[in-house]
Length: 215
Image (cartoon, rainbow, N blue to C red; front, side, top):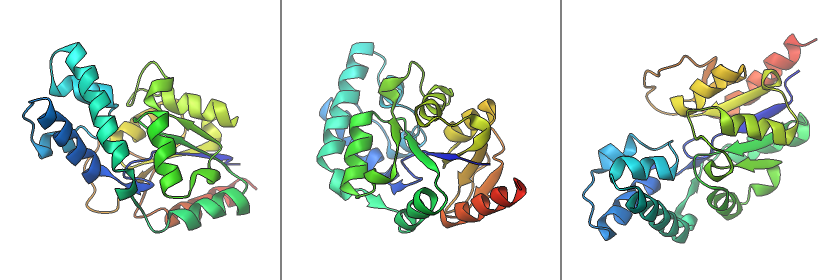
């Protein structure tokens, strides 16, 4: 029986990739660092610190850049867009199927909570894990392991749902059911997801399928 779902945040529950890219570029500009939007876009999914280290070579400057970026992003958190099917899907998973729900995101917990509160979906979740709570960020599995520990669900009883290989690689590694959300054109990934869905409503169909298979 599948008992839990761990969601990535950006690109999975909320449409924030463009906002992340723009705020990275703005933070870089303030620090006098030239960077292209296309290069930053390819880094989204890593932790802020890991992205900053790829943008500037000096460690101290990288930490300063990551802090500045978070400040700029939080100031614009109301610009975050929620994918339209999300509230309906979360409500069914939690209250119809009784599943434990968590968020595991490469951002920090403060940002996770700010986004979920801004979009009025925070009460659906039993736990949040950000890059600041684990030693190693995605694509290492640490934050997914911690998220599952917090909700008391084993990997084999869980779906891990995300929109990049940074979610799929660790999900497969720990033996969870990996689900790739591919709302547009699917890119070839370094790991094969167990399932590919076009939006989160299809996750309900997967829950039904696995529930039926468990009897």
